[in-house]
Amino acid sequence: MKNSFNLKIKYLFSALILLPFSMVSQQLSAEQKSVTLDHIKSSSTINIGYRQLEPFSFRDSDGKVTGYTIELCNMIADQLRISLGIKKLAIHYIPILFTERVSALNSSKIDLDCSVNTVAPERQNSVSFSVDYFVANMRIISLRTNNIKSLNDLKGRAIAVPRGSKDLLELNRINREKNLSLSIVTSDTVEDAFDMMMQKRTAALILDDIVAYPYINQSEHPEDFTVSSEVVGDKMKYALMMRKEDPLFVAFVDKTLGQIFESPLNAQLTSKWLAQKVVMKNTQNTQY
Image (cartoon, rainbow, N blue to C red; front, side):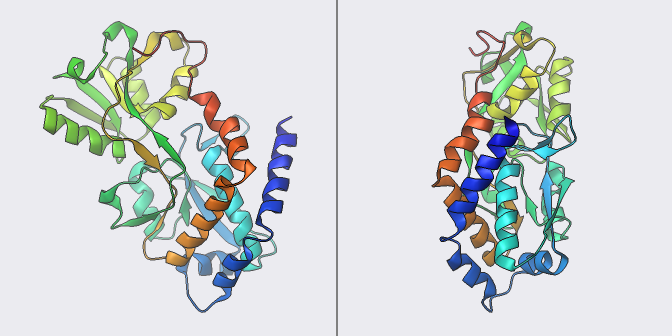
């Protein structure tokens, strides 16, 4: 069933790009230079950064790197192969922490970060973002026994949040503006932040809802957790991240994403990866 779906996706995408990408191919053959495209063409390799963040990017139990954004980036890679005239393009998936993204791009360790990247003005001087592909809400994740329903319930308490994330930037701003006197405890990964909350080392975790659901679903007792109905801070727009000052590569990525989003592929990928993750399974009354 899974193989059948993947073959259908590949067929639809192949049909989709035959005509519209002639213009992009012409752009790539023009005189304008791109550090990223030059590297990909000369090495016949694209290095893709990712984090263990279902349903967007993760290594599954079989060792395969997959997820919604990974599928998007695989399609981008296939288009690069065609447009650059590469017979066989190798795709290397490289685990990258939130705090490593910018340096990994600027040092050419990766060509494209295909995980959860929130568009933030604070980052736009250092990196480039694609068009956004998803909008999430940041919420309070906690153990039901803590009886936490809102930010006011967190005053003076310890809160876990991943280091280097937009969630941390937003939480710092809200903490200052609302005088919450929060003790903010950071971690390298979302999993570590979730574990701190689960092990009662912090009162709660601040995290985007769609990223939190898989951790709750896969826990031994999903019913032990609550997700606030209150949205914390601004909406989180997710995008792919690229190195700064490479407009030709950014334009290629945006063009590819635009064609996917306008095609039947968009609904199929959303159904496969995103729609099923928005509601926590095997759990009742988990949101206040």
